[in-house]
Image (cartoon, rainbow, N blue to C red):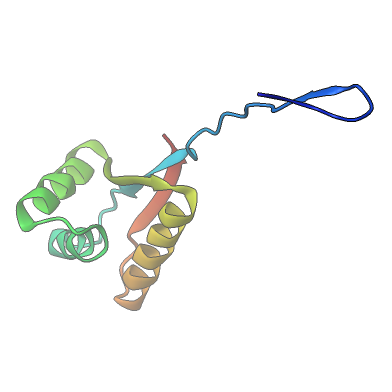
Length: 102
């Protein structure tokens, strides 16, 4: 689309493309001290997983050393990490939750 200005110049609308924000994986890391039931509780409470899915993720964390809790925009992922770590510390568990770019 072009518009004519009085001084003879033509202005064209510049098309800009927007990209969706980068997404981040929220991961739980395995440790030898946090009880499996607590990990399941965290997955249900903070990631809205049903018990079956939370159990599968917990077992992945236990067997493979880490498990994906979800994929979110940066701010949401950061908030989830803070919530999980704070909850774990309040219950005196060393559970580690981190985020990484997807």
